[in-house]
Image 1 (cartoon, helix red, strand yellow):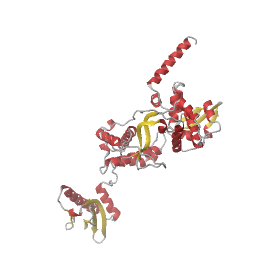
Image 2 (cartoon, rainbow, N blue to C red):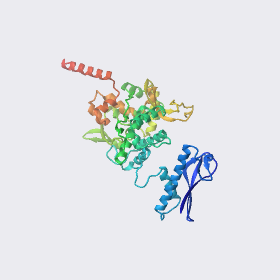
Image 3 (tube, rainbow, N blue to C red):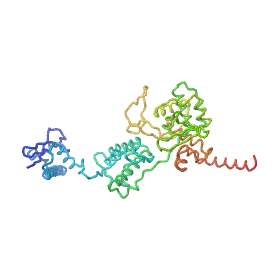
Image 4 (cartoon, rainbow, N blue to C red):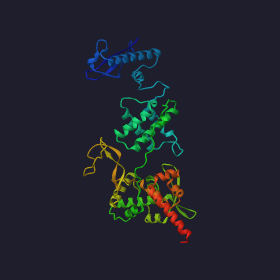
Length: 437
């Protein structure tokens, strides 16, 4: 006959409760139950908790039920391999750490892990298979953040309703000091996880579609005006690294591409077709084919050849140094990627450039000198903003690869005053043309 008993080992508080499984002289196995108790509340005579409180009564019931489940499992299949792994599996099944075969977990964290584990066979935005590294990292970050949020509680897919969404969003904004844009993006990622779980047969909350994430409106669209670009172009530089970064910057603001696509350019991207000198490339993010004419301004920048290769991370760092040298220091309200402490305050660096305390990277909103918030994305945005109104919008969008004009107009740094001025200039030119001027 199989028997299950419990005991403590040691006198620490709390002490883990061990389970002993015995069957005749064939099996004598020990495993931790995953439960703990203050030794003062353990009755060594009965090998059970004292029934002093409702919590201890619940613990005693759990241990009794665990013992029944293990003996029932053994009696149902006495010929299976009985060893430590089998016993651990029974304990894990009872504690909810392992699901019966064929049953799917309805925990949010497990559904996130399922997406991560199957990332290589999932359709991506380019129509091919395999999620990008950044997309996978986005799900990993969601999983880490959610585990931090839930603590010992394990939230289920069906728990994601309007109230959950608001609470989770508030916690990210107020407790973790994440930016509004990042927090809303995590809500969107969570909704995607729930949608995927529903496809896999799990029930979702009826309020899921009403949980609000979405994009936040940019407080400040950061770009370099033609005047600022001229200022950078004619700044005296000593550093060869900054001269190289300047060449990449000026080239990028003429080509309108994302940082990594820009830095990946090589001689093979330059071709001549039907007498036109062109740059051809495939954008990494969208998979779109882009063809850009090499204009006189681009040829001027490329005198002496392409700048030498650097990493995107180094380019972002050098851009800030370059713009500081050029005194691009107008104060603007924007988000700066920086290291913050638990209070959400920026952590300063010492004379050696090391942070004086531990923290986490955040996008911190504030009034910053413009050079501190410059990054590689300024190339594409500057091109789009500076050429808008000078070139037909569809032609600009062919180069930037924006899908819709609405998205494009939300992307560029033009105010209502800029549009009013553009309309005024248009009618002024029309009047001149009509008068034969």
